[in-house]
Length: 163
Image (cartoon, rainbow, N blue to C red; front, side, top):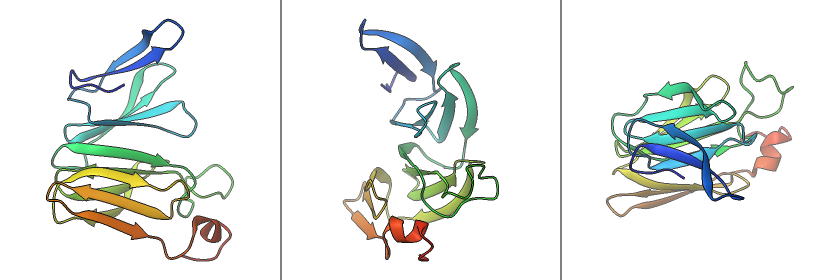
């Protein structure tokens, strides 16, 4: 769970007690587990932090937004593989962040470099991605709901069908 007291707690469901607590450093707006479940992204203030959940240590602090990051999503196997992709040619994992600065940013999770940026006409307050990565929905503070659909399904992209 993420909280406005700046903490993220991982709960042991057997005891209903926190098994781990980490300090994001700002009120936590959103969290997202990586597909391996060994890493966690936390969003709050103008930063996104990447945590190693085995040790509780912060691995990265990303400061690519000018205002509060309201949402973060991690999507496995989307997009072309990066040069650093060590998984043998599969598609790379991407992280999407949306902020009150109106920017949606896409990061390559191998090196956490921004690969794509979209500017929206208002502060981004919510975001969702379809499980097959075919649809991206973004909600803004000025009432806009943007729904973008991929021209080709992910299965065609991974099979080399272009995109």
